[in-house]
Length: 264
Image 1 (cartoon, rainbow, N blue to C red):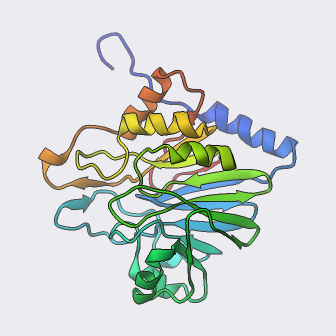
Image 2 (tube, rainbow, N blue to C red; image 1 turned 135 degrees about the horizontal axis):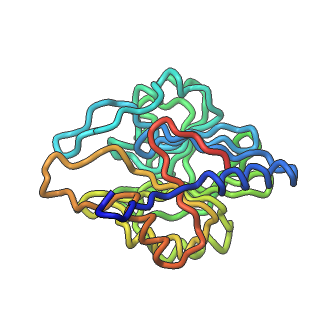
């Protein structure tokens, strides 16, 4: 509360209820997103469960600290049909988790395949840009990403629906091609909350939404922060949601904290 003006907070209940009702009415299976933490997300789509960028360690590194623990442990997150690893940075790949997966397929950019095998992955599948494979009932395609490491995003398609997991990337024109090829209805986009340019800030994320035109966007890359206050820039997923609303976009923002699950 500031003065006599109550701060507005995003409210998504009506939208999510309407989405769930529409899916039941037209016979579409639910799309469920569970935020485990940072960029680790459980996507349940068409009866298939896919985990993204596993990171379960409670530790950060000398520059970044993990400020929010994952909502699930490695052991609680093994019951999946596949795992997507966008790149090999410390906060996006978890060696002990890979070693625990057995024959569960782990999909990554082709150039990262050898490293993930060295970390203990047994069934590591490498994809080049625009290449696809199938896991369960889903078609998974590697799409371009621009980051400080060899990286890719992924589009998951099934039963007439598409989800875009960006991994770590800056906003670039290739997002327009992703939109033209796949028409993703939901996008998981990184929103960096620190001054080191590693992924998108609030304004770049708004630009990405204008290129992708998803129905819903879920901010990811949460729960870590620079140890030095000088590296913090004050940007937040809430700030991104506010800027997106001010831009006139019809895209909804779903802000998920660790442990939150939503159906779309």
